[in-house]
Length: 315
Image 1 (cartoon, helix red, strand yellow):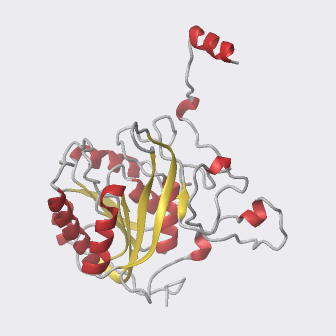
Image 2: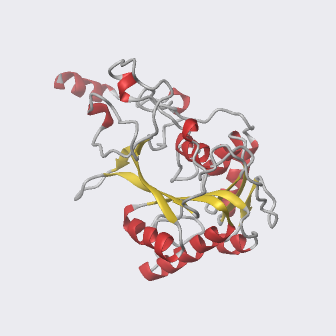
Image 3: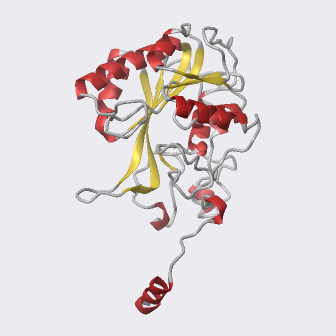
């Protein structure tokens, strides 16, 4: 049965010091970790779409990328505890292949295929603008894993829209419902599916680190870490990036260990971790449909006199 509040002995990542980011290749660093040493792994690897990283070639041949992906996911499977959980964030291009590798070749069970819907999608000219990513929720043992339902409940539409007294006051689990624009729906996002709405961390948001182009929202990682681990558990991120996984793990009183190939990114992650404390509030809006993310320094677009005249004339 799932570990809902019933503690099992906590594994320890004895091979590497905890509560820090380690600079280096994820395969080499994973090899230094003992088996069954972490409870939760979250990975947001390169998507192999030609993104301009400073220390990694994101233009591998497809077969090479899939072989590499199987290697690092296999190491993740090895270091996870028997009741451990693995979350994988990936784009459209390789989502199906990596799911097959994880389940059919590495033995993971997929509990949910979550779609993360965000605003400010990537603008495209000859196809629909992309405004989503895939979040695979894998477990090693389908009969024994952590899923803390009470830690991630959200208000139901019955409560928010209809004011129905029959609504469960504790809310419902987040949902996976297909949707076009949440602001256009009279009932907003349904609260019991697997399409999650969190705004992408855009350049003007206060949460934005400013030095990494693929920053995940803290509230999204908060939902995953709360659901799939307990206080004191070890959380692993093999692709540190902007450091959001590690920062949220620290705020939520988890132990953590992260890897980052880039020396520059690793130093920035260390600075980010040094500026926060356990118990600090997560950045971003917990209920994004109710609250607009803060803009850094209250910054707004400044329009010149000509733009103002054009806008007035258009009315």
